[in-house]
Image (cartoon, rainbow, N blue to C red; front, side, top):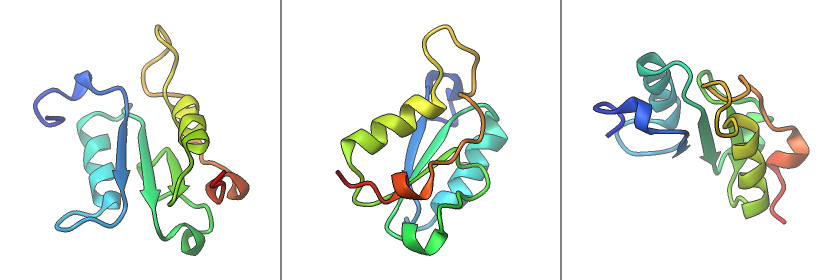
Length: 102
């Protein structure tokens, strides 16, 4: 698990609405345990969020998400092998990419 071995994870992909713990809360806890871990959040509430990722979230994607949009988000937040840990920082996808379902 992430709690036991946080350095074994290159990225965490989570939903926003989950029972017991929201994706927002999870992202903050992940960053508390390992500040550099990239977090990608999927949400059915993308239109309501106006493209603004919650604190601790590096990329926000509206569901249903296309494979192309997920690949772009992962490429944006996960460094290539041998790159610096923690991705490229707190980048967020633009509004057009959040709504990209192609």
